[in-house]
Image (cartoon, rainbow, N blue to C red; front, side, top):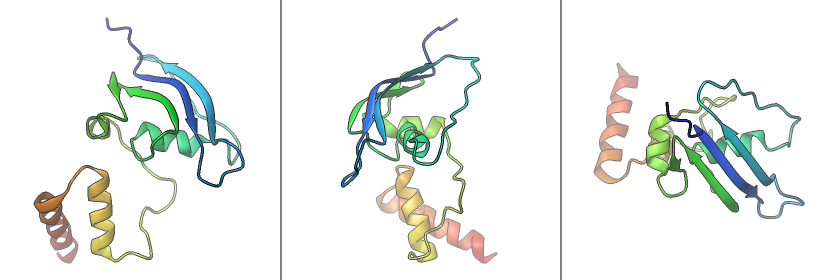
Length: 129
């Protein structure tokens, strides 16, 4: 049996521009196969920041994150295909049109160019039926 961690985080730090203090500061964590794990903390503790980095949606300031042995920074597309994120709030941006929302989330999944255009049009046709 492979005993490598499913998620391995080393010295993870995230400092937001203009932030008073780091959202994450030197976090180290290893979650092994079969483990039950919960992420608890008060507002502002860095939970959403950590999840966004794990999913490849946000770049860390320093440190490394590996999911299923894959470095999130160097191969975010592979990580995104292995895990998913369900946001706690409605994941639509009111300042964007429907097509812009679809394109935004398509780009987040690694689509671009003709493939992004093709998928956006297919999604729009589904909504019309």
